[in-house]
Amino acid sequence: MTLDLTAELSATRLLAVIRGTDTAAAIAAGTALLTEGVTIVEVALTTPDALSAIEALRQAAPPGCLVGAGTVLTSADVADVAAAGAQFVVTPAVVDSVAEAARRGLPVAAGALTPTEAYTAVRLGASAVKLFPASVGGPAYLKAVRDPFPDIPFVAVGGVGLAEVPAYLAAGAVAVGVGGPLVGDAASGGDLDALRARAREYVAVARGEVAA
Image 1 (cartoon, rainbow, N blue to C red):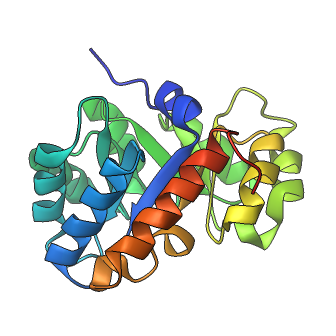
Image 2 (cartoon, rainbow, N blue to C red; image 1 turned 135 degrees about the horizontal axis):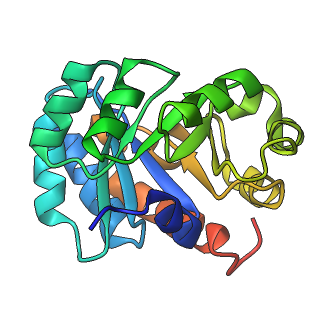
């Protein structure tokens, strides 16, 4: 059964981006996120030994949670992350990996900033478009790009602080993707208790349970 990434993102409204400088810390950060209600996490391939981190998090993930790979650029990267057990792929741009992931049946959220890039990403088989960096134009830009493409699922990523989450969702994003503002330095050995607290806040705001 093929994973419906858009449906999963629409249900949880939150994607956590793990990008660190230490493999063990990245695994610990991912585990903390998964135990605090973040159900979709992405490990960036710029993290040392990211493939091992993906494998470890797949094993640790509670039922219903998803672990994917980010900063996936090439066809070779797609092969590597698929072998490591990644359940979805995220890219920073419209790159070779988009078509290759689609060919393999691996859902991909392709990075794009302009309308042309967004349309091209979908034509290549992207399941969703990661509007990146979203902070360049904010929620108003997301709405403007989305208006001519109402059927494209957009995920706002890049500089999305807790206070901005509701505005991006109101502008039509199916979810927000958050790295630094959520993970902080936890994936490089930082405070896991602080990460857990931020995770609970983001989950609650993304679900609309509390105001930002």
